[in-house]
Image 1 (tube, rainbow, N blue to C red):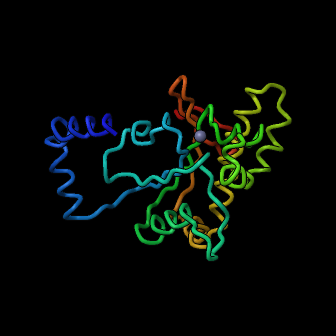
Image 2: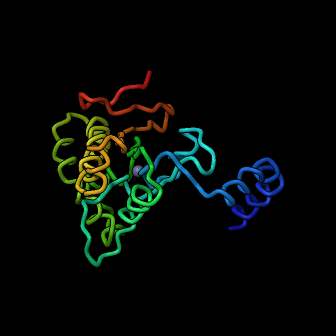
Length: 203
Ligand SMILES: [Zn+2]
Protein backbone atom coordinates (compact mmCIF):
# COMPACT_ATOMS: atom_id res chain seq x y z
CA UNK A 1 0.00 0.00 0.00
CA UNK A 2 2.92 2.37 0.64
CA UNK A 3 3.82 2.28 -3.05
CA UNK A 4 0.24 3.03 -4.03
CA UNK A 5 0.08 5.98 -1.62
CA UNK A 6 3.40 7.27 -2.93
CA UNK A 7 1.82 7.15 -6.39
CA UNK A 8 -1.23 8.99 -5.11
CA UNK A 9 1.00 11.75 -3.75
CA UNK A 10 2.68 12.05 -7.16
CA UNK A 11 -0.75 12.26 -8.77
CA UNK A 12 -1.83 15.05 -6.42
CA UNK A 13 1.42 16.91 -6.95
CA UNK A 14 1.84 16.45 -10.70
CA UNK A 15 -1.33 15.09 -12.30
CA UNK A 16 -4.07 16.83 -10.35
CA UNK A 17 -3.28 20.46 -11.16
CA UNK A 18 -3.40 19.55 -14.86
CA UNK A 19 -6.50 17.39 -14.54
CA UNK A 20 -8.45 19.49 -12.08
CA UNK A 21 -10.57 21.34 -14.60
CA UNK A 22 -11.47 18.09 -16.36
CA UNK A 23 -12.59 16.41 -13.15
CA UNK A 24 -14.57 19.46 -12.05
CA UNK A 25 -16.39 19.47 -15.39
CA UNK A 26 -17.06 15.75 -15.09
CA UNK A 27 -18.40 16.32 -11.58
CA UNK A 28 -20.64 19.19 -12.68
CA UNK A 29 -21.87 17.82 -16.00
CA UNK A 30 -21.68 14.05 -15.36
CA UNK A 31 -20.08 11.49 -17.61
CA UNK A 32 -20.93 10.76 -21.22
CA UNK A 33 -18.55 7.96 -22.15
CA UNK A 34 -18.69 6.75 -25.73
CA UNK A 35 -17.61 3.17 -25.13
CA UNK A 36 -17.50 0.32 -22.67
CA UNK A 37 -14.44 -1.89 -22.78
CA UNK A 38 -14.72 -5.40 -21.37
CA UNK A 39 -11.21 -6.53 -20.66
CA UNK A 40 -9.11 -8.83 -18.51
CA UNK A 41 -8.02 -8.20 -14.94
CA UNK A 42 -4.39 -8.68 -16.09
CA UNK A 43 -2.15 -5.86 -14.82
CA UNK A 44 -0.36 -5.63 -18.16
CA UNK A 45 -3.49 -4.67 -20.09
CA UNK A 46 -4.52 -1.07 -19.49
CA UNK A 47 -7.33 0.00 -21.85
CA UNK A 48 -6.90 3.70 -21.01
CA UNK A 49 -3.26 3.46 -22.08
CA UNK A 50 -3.92 1.34 -25.18
CA UNK A 51 -6.69 3.61 -26.45
CA UNK A 52 -5.08 6.78 -25.04
CA UNK A 53 -8.27 7.94 -23.32
CA UNK A 54 -8.78 10.38 -20.48
CA UNK A 55 -11.23 10.08 -17.57
CA UNK A 56 -14.82 10.40 -18.71
CA UNK A 57 -14.36 8.95 -22.19
CA UNK A 58 -14.51 5.19 -21.64
CA UNK A 59 -16.08 2.81 -19.15
CA UNK A 60 -14.28 -0.40 -18.38
CA UNK A 61 -15.24 -3.62 -16.69
CA UNK A 62 -12.54 -6.13 -15.97
CA UNK A 63 -12.75 -9.79 -15.10
CA UNK A 64 -10.75 -12.94 -15.68
CA UNK A 65 -10.22 -13.35 -19.45
CA UNK A 66 -12.65 -10.60 -20.55
CA UNK A 67 -15.61 -12.94 -20.55
CA UNK A 68 -19.21 -11.81 -20.90
CA UNK A 69 -21.56 -14.37 -19.35
CA UNK A 70 -24.85 -15.15 -21.07
CA UNK A 71 -27.91 -13.11 -20.10
CA UNK A 72 -29.27 -14.70 -16.92
CA UNK A 73 -31.58 -12.46 -14.88
CA UNK A 74 -31.61 -14.62 -11.75
CA UNK A 75 -30.66 -14.09 -8.09
CA UNK A 76 -26.90 -14.59 -8.58
CA UNK A 77 -24.57 -11.60 -8.31
CA UNK A 78 -23.78 -10.66 -11.90
CA UNK A 79 -21.05 -8.02 -11.77
CA UNK A 80 -20.23 -7.92 -15.46
CA UNK A 81 -23.89 -8.00 -16.49
CA UNK A 82 -24.68 -5.14 -14.09
CA UNK A 83 -21.90 -3.07 -15.68
CA UNK A 84 -23.32 -3.84 -19.13
CA UNK A 85 -26.79 -2.78 -18.07
CA UNK A 86 -25.50 0.47 -16.59
CA UNK A 87 -23.43 1.25 -19.68
CA UNK A 88 -26.05 0.35 -22.28
CA UNK A 89 -29.39 1.18 -20.65
CA UNK A 90 -28.43 4.11 -18.42
CA UNK A 91 -25.46 5.78 -20.12
CA UNK A 92 -26.40 4.57 -23.62
CA UNK A 93 -22.84 4.00 -24.83
CA UNK A 94 -22.73 3.50 -28.61
CA UNK A 95 -19.80 1.05 -28.58
CA UNK A 96 -18.82 -2.06 -26.62
CA UNK A 97 -15.32 -3.42 -27.13
CA UNK A 98 -14.27 -6.85 -25.91
CA UNK A 99 -10.51 -6.53 -25.46
CA UNK A 100 -8.58 -9.77 -25.04
CA UNK A 101 -4.83 -10.13 -24.84
CA UNK A 102 -1.80 -12.36 -25.30
CA UNK A 103 -0.30 -14.45 -22.50
CA UNK A 104 -3.67 -14.54 -20.73
CA UNK A 105 -3.51 -16.66 -17.60
CA UNK A 106 -7.28 -17.13 -17.53
CA UNK A 107 -7.18 -18.57 -21.03
CA UNK A 108 -4.23 -20.76 -20.05
CA UNK A 109 -6.39 -22.11 -17.21
CA UNK A 110 -9.08 -22.86 -19.78
CA UNK A 111 -6.68 -24.86 -21.95
CA UNK A 112 -4.55 -26.55 -19.33
CA UNK A 113 -6.95 -26.60 -16.38
CA UNK A 114 -7.08 -24.06 -13.57
CA UNK A 115 -4.38 -24.12 -10.90
CA UNK A 116 -5.57 -25.96 -7.78
CA UNK A 117 -5.71 -22.71 -5.84
CA UNK A 118 -7.99 -21.15 -8.44
CA UNK A 119 -10.64 -23.84 -8.53
CA UNK A 120 -13.37 -22.11 -6.50
CA UNK A 121 -14.20 -19.43 -9.05
CA UNK A 122 -11.72 -19.30 -11.94
CA UNK A 123 -12.41 -22.81 -13.21
CA UNK A 124 -16.23 -22.49 -13.25
CA UNK A 125 -15.95 -18.96 -14.65
CA UNK A 126 -13.74 -20.10 -17.52
CA UNK A 127 -15.99 -23.07 -18.25
CA UNK A 128 -18.38 -20.73 -20.09
CA UNK A 129 -15.73 -20.57 -22.83
CA UNK A 130 -15.44 -24.33 -23.30
CA UNK A 131 -16.17 -23.97 -27.02
CA UNK A 132 -13.07 -21.75 -27.38
CA UNK A 133 -10.98 -24.51 -25.83
CA UNK A 134 -12.31 -27.07 -28.27
CA UNK A 135 -11.48 -24.79 -31.17
CA UNK A 136 -7.98 -24.05 -29.88
CA UNK A 137 -7.03 -27.68 -29.32
CA UNK A 138 -6.98 -28.16 -33.10
CA UNK A 139 -3.86 -25.97 -33.28
CA UNK A 140 -0.48 -27.69 -33.42
CA UNK A 141 1.67 -25.76 -30.95
CA UNK A 142 1.02 -24.53 -27.40
CA UNK A 143 1.58 -20.92 -28.54
CA UNK A 144 -0.90 -21.25 -31.39
CA UNK A 145 -3.43 -22.95 -29.08
CA UNK A 146 -3.10 -20.14 -26.55
CA UNK A 147 -3.57 -17.36 -29.09
CA UNK A 148 -6.40 -19.15 -30.87
CA UNK A 149 -8.19 -19.62 -27.54
CA UNK A 150 -7.63 -15.98 -26.55
CA UNK A 151 -9.23 -14.84 -29.79
CA UNK A 152 -12.00 -17.44 -29.63
CA UNK A 153 -12.86 -16.27 -26.09
CA UNK A 154 -13.41 -12.76 -27.49
CA UNK A 155 -15.90 -14.24 -29.96
CA UNK A 156 -17.66 -16.14 -27.16
CA UNK A 157 -18.08 -12.85 -25.28
CA UNK A 158 -19.39 -11.09 -28.39
CA UNK A 159 -21.90 -13.90 -28.96
CA UNK A 160 -22.99 -13.74 -25.31
CA UNK A 161 -23.45 -9.97 -25.56
CA UNK A 162 -26.17 -10.66 -28.12
CA UNK A 163 -28.10 -12.78 -25.59
CA UNK A 164 -28.90 -9.55 -23.67
CA UNK A 165 -32.20 -8.33 -25.16
CA UNK A 166 -31.37 -4.60 -24.84
CA UNK A 167 -27.97 -5.16 -26.49
CA UNK A 168 -29.53 -7.19 -29.29
CA UNK A 169 -32.13 -4.44 -29.79
CA UNK A 170 -29.46 -1.71 -29.88
CA UNK A 171 -27.39 -3.61 -32.42
CA UNK A 172 -30.47 -4.23 -34.58
CA UNK A 173 -31.42 -0.54 -34.40
CA UNK A 174 -27.89 0.56 -35.27
CA UNK A 175 -27.45 2.55 -32.04
CA UNK A 176 -24.97 0.10 -30.53
CA UNK A 177 -21.95 -1.50 -32.16
CA UNK A 178 -19.92 -4.43 -30.83
CA UNK A 179 -16.20 -4.84 -31.49
CA UNK A 180 -13.51 -7.41 -30.72
CA UNK A 181 -9.83 -6.63 -30.22
CA UNK A 182 -6.73 -8.50 -29.05
CA UNK A 183 -3.63 -6.86 -27.58
CA UNK A 184 -0.16 -8.42 -27.81
CA UNK A 185 1.64 -7.65 -24.57
CA UNK A 186 5.19 -8.11 -25.83
CA UNK A 187 4.86 -5.97 -28.98
CA UNK A 188 2.12 -3.56 -27.86
CA UNK A 189 0.26 -4.25 -31.12
CA UNK A 190 -3.54 -4.27 -31.23
CA UNK A 191 -5.44 -6.47 -33.67
CA UNK A 192 -9.14 -5.93 -34.33
CA UNK A 193 -11.75 -8.51 -35.26
CA UNK A 194 -12.74 -8.30 -38.92
CA UNK A 195 -16.05 -9.31 -40.53
CA UNK A 196 -14.36 -12.48 -41.86
CA UNK A 197 -13.56 -13.61 -38.30
CA UNK A 198 -9.81 -12.92 -38.45
CA UNK A 199 -7.91 -10.51 -36.25
CA UNK A 200 -5.92 -7.89 -38.20
CA UNK A 201 -3.94 -4.74 -37.49
CA UNK A 202 -6.21 -1.71 -37.95
CA UNK A 203 -5.29 0.59 -40.85
ZN1 LIG B 1 -6.01 -12.18 -19.20
